[in-house]
Structures are given as structure tokens and as C-alpha cells.
Length: 140
Image (tube, rainbow, N blue to C red):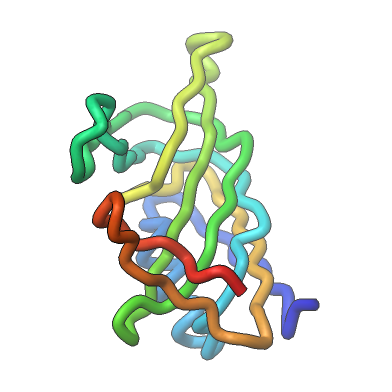
């Protein structure tokens, strides 16, 4: 199913999306499923769909060490440019039961972040959804 499976480990202070992009560029990966993300973050910015049903995103930032409980996503292309679509769920160890999660706009590793990447043998692409105005992965 996968052309290759890769593991990227990030260290304190590294930008998750930038390093993921740099790694995939170095390995020549343009199409992938982000199979899993675990680790800890010191900062994360989520893109949130509007709650009122209107178009466009709002943003929510969280500063403080959190543990990533789960993360997944895709690497595809949109208008011939690389496009990462990544979501995570995280918890705050100082606030038991408190969860945050959503679409990752930016994130910075705290202790470490481990990302498992399944490279696909075909190219995933995105198209613009006419109803929402957002991009969506094209079904294979």
C-alpha cells in the first residue's frame, strides 16, 4: 500500500509544519498519509471553521506545554503546490481532562514530536469545494 514509511523526530523548539515540509522535500515525498503524531508542544495555533456557518477560518492559539494524544493528516498538492492538512488532539497535563484539538496552522515542539509518514505510490490532489470555498482532498 505505501511506497515507504518514514519516521521524523523533532526536537525542542522546532516548527512542526516547517520541519515536516523540509523532511518531505529532502526525501522527495509529495503524496502521503500522516499516520500518526505523538509528543509534546510548547505552542500550537489551530485553524477553526466558523461556528456560525459562514466561510473562512478563525484562529485559536495555545501557549504552554501540552501532550499530543493523536495526530493525523495528509500531504497532497493544490495548484501544483505542496499542501499539508494536519489535525491533532492534545491534553494539558496541568489541567486533567482538558482537551484541545483541530486543524494545525502552526506548532512548536517542546520535548519531542514523532511523526510517522506513509508515502503513497500515487499523487493525492486537492480541489476547491464549491459549497464551502475550502480545499478538499480529491477522492481516489
